Length: 247
Ligand SMILES: Nc1ncnc2c1ncn2[C@@H]1O[C@H](COP(=O)(O)OP(=O)(O)OP(=O)(O)O)[C@@H](O)[C@H]1O
Image 1 (cartoon, rainbow, N blue to C red):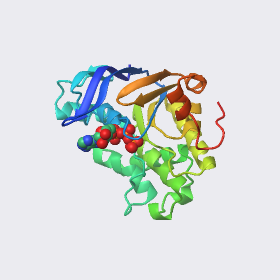
Image 2 (image 1 turned 30 degrees about the vertical axis):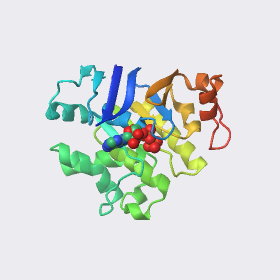
Image 3 (image 1 turned 90 degrees about the vertical axis):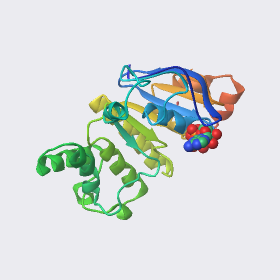
């Protein structure tokens, strides 16, 4: 099991965010987290990244409980994950290629030519062309920025990829292209993917959806089942914003 939550309570100070949530993410699954604003999606990602410890319950990452782990041990687990932030968070002073080389230069002692080859490979997998490698982030379209951020997240061959609203700000065609890319990454490398999304058509590529509401998981199942649910809250949630859903 890549991620396992058992009756997890979490929060900040006096604010309780999660009230006893349990779920599992298996190797090579693509799992979406959906839910309204303030439902606790970002906090869930922080727990998965080991940036926040549960108030109660068990969080197991790669089969290991994080309860008694030191910061150093948590960092070792984080090193097995790649993250794509909502707004790509690329370094503006570095080229596309340098952005993707950066994590490897920081973490591994490898010949620069090998680091560069790895970065070129990851960028190509993510659909960027060699003529784009020497551009700066400000010269890229939104879709290209996301692809670069994905290539950077893949630079250290993570076992788990975490994506925070990967398609936000993209037009429907670019969003669909990016969804397909995430699926290709999973199919090619066997990477497990957890993504927070508001973009319901993206659920097409997912094996499982977790819906959060008021700190609880109110749905844990296949996307198809979510779209067929008779639950009034879920029916409201699946009123799609990006055209017709093709599930
Ligand atoms: N650092 C923090 N300190 C205190 N409270 C916080 C902190 N971060 C989040 N919260 C609170 O925790 C709750 C859940 O927030 P979270 O960001 O996880 O929700 P979300 O589902 O990601 O929302 P959104 O879709 O709007 O990003 C909210 O009530 C929020 O105000």
